[in-house]
Amino acid sequence: MIKMKGITKIYAHDGVETVALAGVNINVEEGEFLAIMGPSGSGKSTLMHILGALDSPTGGEYWLDNQDVSRLNDDELADIRNRKIGFVFQAYNLLPRTSALKNVELPMAYAEINKDIRVKRAKEMLGLVGLEDRMEHLSNQLSGGQQQRVAIARALTMDPKIILADEPTGNIASQQAEEIMKIFEKLHKDGRTIVMITHEEDIARWASRVVTIRDGKIVEDRKNSRRTK
Amino acid sequence: MKLTEIIRESFGTLGLNKMRTGLAALGIIIGIGSVIALISLGAGSQKAIENQIQALGANLLTVMPSNSRQGNVRTAGQNTSLTTEDARAIEGSESITTVNRISPELSRRSQVIAGRNNTNSEIVGVETNYAGIHTLEMTSGNFIGERDVTSMTKVAVLGPQTAIDLFGEGINPVGQKIRINKQSFSVIGVTKSKGGSGFNNPDSMIFVPLSTAQKQLFGVDYLSTIAVEAKSKEVMTQAQDEIGYLLLERHKLNNPINADFMIMSQNDILNTASEVTGTFTTLLGGIAAISLLVGGIGIMNIMLVTVTERTREIGLRKALGAKKKTIITQFLVESVILTFFGGIIGMAFGIGVSLLLAKILSTPTALSIPSMFLAIGVSGIIGIVFGWYPAQRAAKLQPIEALRFE
Image (cartoon, rainbow over all chains, first blue to last red; front, side, top):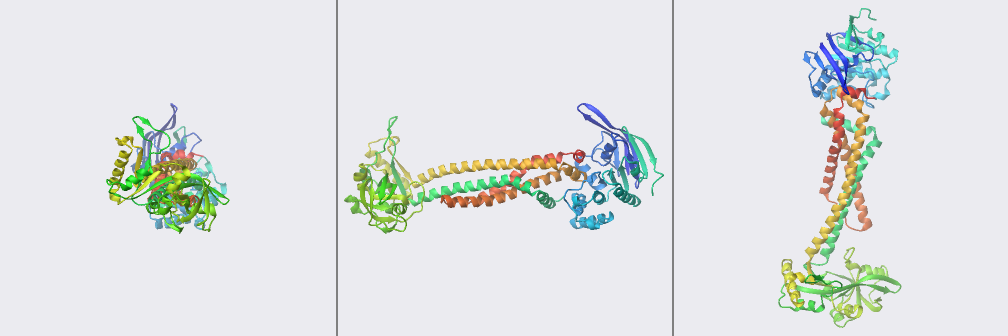
């Protein structure tokens, strides 16, 4: 599903070059639940951005679903993000003062999907994350956990190849965090490919494979044997 | 994303912050409003002047004295070059074939007293033809007759406004006495209102026999104008030439450049007046256009603030698959909605103001439909022009930078 070969990312700032990624090689198979761990400044966010087609690498190759996405222009990247990647952000990033339903519809609106199909599918996805009775609530009327569930529904709506979650429980109280992780586990069981960034061991335990990154390089790559459930 | 959907979403976004939306549109509302109000006021006053000139009468030529030139020297001071003899000559000359009738006139302002009322009015010495040439009608009494002129009687005909000023509303002044320049005149008639305004308004004049005005009131023998009615519209130019040659000959001038008079047709007057009011209208429109420009800059300012404020949202939209074009369209649509509806409200506001001004200043307004469509079109274009830069700024934001933005 994902193939990265010698991915580097170098930021040039005022003539000073900072190496964020120093040659990352990683393959993610279909159906894997991968957690990327690492301390801050390790390059895990940069890796996430490149995985999410939000940013282009300085060097190396990135193949997503048999397509080289490392050399695409802005609009082509927008299409990739729209159709192949579902984002779940730490800060939820829902449209402010907009209903849950409209938020979930948004990626389909950018794909110019017919309104009726959109509403039907958005309702389905909100049902999947247990928010069928909150569909008309505005984003600011929902709790953190509920907002993140809307975000997950939004990530699923275009039936993406991978779901990218960036610290999905970082802003959520621990009890609600477990609910969120249970949703990810269910998605994993349904055969979806999930890549999650976290710095918490507790959260990483839910994944089937954990990769640790340090100073822009992968230093550890292990299958997760002691999964909670 | 489809345009209709972007438009629907933009209405929602603008509705979220009504106060700001209203303030942003206010600049355009005032701009378009003042453009429409001022232009229709200008066009209205132009129409008023045209009406007034038309009301002077048909096929009318006006002969007026002008500064004469002797070589390179202009004679300054009073223009006394037109005389009653000139008028008689125009009437009697065999070389003049295109003139129907003429009206020699002498007008001066003077103090007029009736009882305890006192006004400063335009006194016009006229002959009987005046009423016909200038299409004056009477509400009561008679106009100056031939006998009044020949026997130099002290009679006066009042314009309706003067009648009200001197005797009050609803009182028929016919048979009453007034004092002009300390001499007693009896009122023999009141003219019908012609509805003009400003200078040369026959409603606020007092007509007396020409001979009385020249000899008894002002002690002069010249004229201030000779109004000439040509036989038809087609021979106006010919009449102008005939009178011109006759007067040059009578004044012993051999070069038309030295003429001590000028002959203007109604069209000449109309053109001059239109030119003046046209310049005036353009000037007013120009001033209003500046406020429109300021309104546009206001929109740009608000849009720039919005882009900064919504950086995260823009980043999110891009992460979810919005292309550059979609983001640009979204922001352009928002600013065009602001200016377009601002333009429509401004138009209503402008119409209201111009109707109100028309009532207060009692001038007609000329609301022109094309200028309104133009105003709305212009406000839409302002939306695109001033929305363009903020929209570009929004579209250029990198999704990661935008998502990181706090």
